[in-house]
Every structure is written in structure tokens, then in C-alpha cells.
Length: 558
Ligand SMILES: Cc1cc2nc3c(=O)[nH]c(=O)nc-3n(C[C@H](O)[C@H](O)[C@H](O)COP(=O)(O)OP(=O)(O)OC[C@H]3O[C@@H](n4cnc5c(N)ncnc54)[C@H](O)[C@@H]3O)c2cc1C
Image (cartoon, rainbow, N blue to C red; front, side):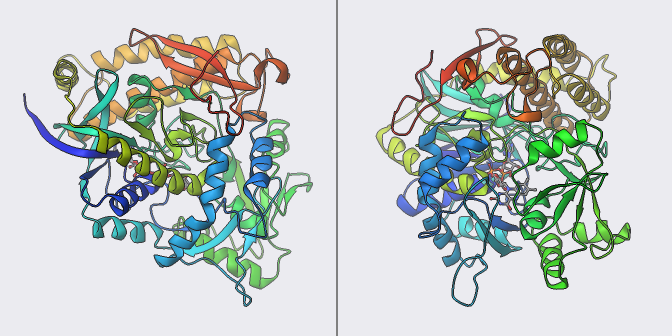
């Protein structure tokens, strides 16, 4: 078989925020253990951070806020569908995390008295702590490099391998050559981010998404195929952000006094980012486009906002606004609904994990946006990257050896070779992705109903057949992209079956069913879980109660 082989103790799939932090932590506590990161792009610039960041959205600063208050805030934000332990543990470890980052040279903003600059992002509590760090990803990458971690860039994980009931490694693909790679590993930490490339963004550009476009739900699907359960896949998160750019700015402008206005000059949100549902409602009612107004703010505040927007997260914003002659002192910023995103960072979708970042499968952990610790943001990616590493190290030390499943590897190789064979294939891959995502946009996001969701499932069968039989592959890059599109389609299937199962409306526009318009707390304040059935095409759903603090029942289902 033309396959590259390797062995490691812990394999981390995805070298973004969570993956880098997991590698650093594992080496801190067990320098003798072999760690390898597979990163689809180049780990120095990949992932949601890519460059820098302007805030750690959840920090419980002593004497200002505490984990109990955070739990109240997040329970309210998630309308009761949140397992308490993971969110609580994350909040508990958040301040130590901030201190650790500071020691690494990450700059948080403090006043003359040494108090951190905090802002109100949640319904209650000032957890958002301002950062001014344009080089955050480089700092993380440097730390990883210092720790003697093996990094394989341009390797995309496509399937996990098991030895009986336990994880034993993964199969990946070189995104330039299409060559397969197999790693035997005692434990695996999935850190492959969420699903950014779902429906189309308003610009129509395939990669012009809010979240990092390399995150195509691969981690969700790898976890699902290995037997993990997905939750919250019906939560279709979309926010109103900069028109045609889908770039972040609410947390930066609104928390500093910016006003979100509708077209009738009504102020919808000011001071805290706590009325996203109202913003979506205003657009649905025809009061859009919404815009952010900063004109009333003092020069000092406008300059601060410009500094953050133009240096930290997406510095390209400076050119974007300049070329459109938009000066915040005289012009408002037009907002437009973004594409839908499925993720556990800003949203509530992902692999269900407990407070140990455990997925319920021996040897498999998940951290960051691929895991469902609802709305955990960067804090969750870092904290659960560390927690996953701590637990993976423990388990790794107890395992002598694992075997990889050669039969499965062979079937993956055969499928790849059949996808590479262009005989009688004539659909261009870019056009295929465009059509898949356009149809997802037609049938999956709110307003949802049984008819529309089933229509998607019909289309999905057509697309899966086209993917195997009709889409042309020119090179290794196209091939990797084909696997990404397969994952996009399968994430849409998961979202559809979860939405069909949840016969109520919840979370505003994130899950509005026109055939069940009311929220039904009595029957539906619980998880809808998606599981892979016996056959590739079959998905099963079930429900599970929300787990309360210290109840240790995360993997117990109805
Ligand atoms: C624009 C934007 C602004 C944000 N601002 C803030 C903020 O101010 N404060 C805050 O707290 N949070 C913020 N967040 C959220 C936060 O950045 C994310 O929750 C967090 O970075 C997610 O980390 P992650 O490691 O899960 O994903 P990522 O950092 O996105 O990393 C995922 C990595 O996996 C790789 N990958 C994907 N698939 C595969 C595969 N199959 N094989 C190998 N590698 C793969 C990707 O290339 C990527 O490098 C923001 C997010 C975005 C998108």
C-alpha cells in the first residue's frame, strides 16, 4: 500500500488554539511522551485566531465574578440546555489561564491601579477581559516549538482508527499530494474546530466566512464515525456582522458604547452583546439592514476601537473600510446576517464531552470548537486543550500497545483511489461546493419545518452519489477538498435530523420551527444527540437530560 506510516503516544488533530495548548500542556507534565500534531494548514497561522485576539471572553477575576455567576449567565444564554460541570470547571480555571498567558507575554489591558479591563458580553457578569495581542498565534506556536512536539503541517485527519472499543490512531491525507498517512496512537485529542463552511456567506465567496474556512466539520464527522455523540447540531448560529466581510466587531464596538440600530433609528443593543435574538428578529421583520453607529463616541474610544479592529483579529478590516471610504466618525457600519456556523465555541454544536474533555470512547478526547461546551470561546479551547492533555497523558501511560485496523485502512485507500479516478466525471469541484452550500442554505437554517428538512435529506443522497461518481479531481488539493465537502454534507445531515427530532422552537433564530413555533421546556429542555447508525447513510437520534453540577451522568441517556 502506498501509505506513509508513523507512531506516536498522543496524536492531536488540529493545531489551532486548543491543539497548541493541548500539546504544550502534555509536554509540561510528561516531557518523555511523544506528541504529534496533524495540522491541515500551517499551524503558525491556522485556525480561528490566525493572528491575534482582542479578548478572552470568559474569565472569572477574583472579587469581580465567580464560576457560579458564570453558570447562571451561560444557563440563561443557552436556554437551559447546557451541562453544568464542563462550563463550571472552565470558569474555575479561567483566571489561572489568564495568568499563564500573561507569563508567556500575552498582553491584557490593565488600568493604573492594576485592574483588568473587563467588558459585559454575557447577560450578567463582566467576564470578557480585554487583550491587546496581535501575535497570539505566533506566541502559542513558539511555545509548541520549544517543547519538542512533532508537527506535520498540511495533514488533514479523515478517519479515526480503533482497536476494539479503544482508539488506536487515525488516517490522514496530505492536502497537497493526496498521499495517505496512518498514525498508530495510544490516545487522540480532536481539536479540528467547528463547521465554518456550511451555507454560503452573503458575499457568495466560498471561503469568505466568519469562522476559519479550513474548519469544515471534519472533527465532528471523525468523532461521529468512531462512535461519539454529537449534540446541539440543530443550533444554527448566525449573527449580524460586517456586510460582505462577515468579520467580528460586535464584542469590540457594542461593549465600548457602540449602538446597534435598525433602519428606523431604533437602538436594538448598546453596552452588552446580549440581544442577538432581537437583532435577528429585527432583520426578519424587515427592519434591516442593521448598522452599528459609533459617531456619538469620543475620539479616544473610536481610536481604541480602530486600533483593535485594525491590528488584532482581522487586520484586513483597515483596508476593507478605507477602500469603501467608511470613517467611523462620520459613517455607520452596515451589518448583514452571516452564514450559519456549527460550533461549540460561539455556538452549542459539537461532540458531547464531560468535564474531562472525554468523549465517552476510551482514549478519545475533544477540545475547543469541535466539542460542545456551549459558547466556550477561546477560554474553553485553551482550558479544555489543557484538560484533554492531562487526561490523555494519564490514559496513555496505562496503555502498552495498540493495533490499527488494517481492513479499515484498506477500505479508505480503495475509496480514495476511486475518488481520484476521473473517468466519466465532469462536475467542477468549486461548482459542486457552491451548489451543496446553496442548497444547505435553502433547507437547513431557520425558519425550519419538517418538509424543508426532509427536502435536504433527499438532496443529500443526490450529492453523495455525485461526490463519488461525477466530481472531477485535478490534484491532491482537490481531493482533500472533496473530503471536506463530504463532511459539509454529513454535518448538514446531522443538523437536519437533530432539527427534525427537536419538535419545538428554541434559541431564537438558531432553531425556529414554523411547524412548532413555541418553546416547550417541559419536553425539550434536554439534548438531542446524533449517533452514527449501522450503515454509512443511517443517522440515529436520541435525547439525554441536561447534566447538573457534579451529577456525573453525562454519558447516561434516555
Ligand atoms: C473571527 C473570530 C473572532 C473571535 N474572537 C474571539 C474573542 O475575541 N475572544 C474569545 O474568547 N473567543 C473568540 N473567538 C472564538 C475562539 O477564537 C475559538 O473558539 C477558538 O479559537 C477555537 O479554537 P479551536 O482550537 O477549537 O479551533 P481553531 O483555532 O479554529 O483550530 C482548528 C484547527 O484545526 C485545523 N483542522 C481543521 N480540520 C482539520 C483536520 N481534518 N485535520 C487536521 N487539522 C484540521 C484547522 O486548520 C485549525 O488550525 C473568535 C472566533 C472567531 C472565528
